[in-house]
Amino acid sequence: MAAAPVWSVDPRTGKQREQVAVEATAEEVDVAVRAARDAASALADRTVRAAFLRTAADLLEEAKDHLVEAADAETALGPVRLSGELARTCYQLRAFADMVDEGAFLGIVIDHPDASATPPVPDLRRYKIPLGVVAVYSASNFPFAFSVPGGDTASALAAGCPVVVKAHPDHPGTSELVASVLRRAAVRHGIPEGVLGLVHGFDAGVELVKHPLVAGAGFTGSIRGGRALFDAANARPVPIPFHGELGSLNPVVVTEAAAAERGEQIGTGLAGSMTLGVGQFCVKPGLVLAPEGAGGDRLVKSLTEAVSNTESGVLLDHRMRDDFVAGVRERAALPDVDAPVTPGAG
Image 1: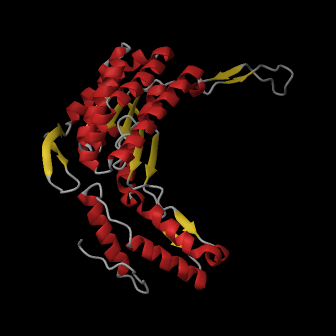
Image 2: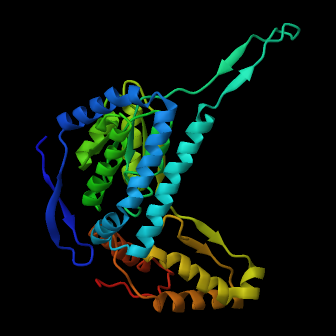
């Protein structure tokens, strides 16, 4: 497998910028996974682990301006949104550090012996242990909270599992910057840099989930991509747990009474939810079932007007734009469909 350059793309213009990373070969994925495996013993000390997570949060906050600027250049999500997301990410890291201190992640269960029971109950004790190297797959729309330093990474490290992250192609430069911050935090506490690996490229992502030393995977993204990785995880000689958030639809059912009482307000609220972040939040409503009649008509009219008057923004990448335009055209062509928005190339 030949290594190919990964370029940063300006989402506002669609133009390529400087090369920021190189797609990892199978051999490079293997090196990253083995380095992570070798760093696992350094996470055994819970005190060190918790301190590492808190230092990571501190260093991310110190680098906030630089990180937000880089992320905005790659995603066009805006400094306000990205600053809030980075704050959330730091909170996540500290919250998991607290769980490490408390020992809550161990899930300890103790069944005391009872010789008088039928049958007799033995002394049974259970607690959780780290699985090993965890593969984390970054999301496109959250370059901090669901990417390199996000919840999947934080929870794995808190459990004592080293991580190899597959960076998302929509923010490769930001991924490299954040990874360097987390590695600096690790080194401050005597943990090898390899505790957090980072690879780029689709093929690298597949190689990662198939690697025999990878013991679990966390994914946030599309149904198509997640399903492919899930199938690869289950096709291994020894299957591994795959924790995935795949796509979203979020149907909303509006009752006849609600539509009659406040159809206009519901329509306006739905428009705000649908267009928040240019519609790139996974919690946006994707299917609304509204009743027939005057209330439903007012809801649809209000929704249509609010969406039409919403200022357009920049989608994260050309694939999302192309899929969106194609989806609108496909649905508008269905029989008995009244499309209030005329699909176009713009």
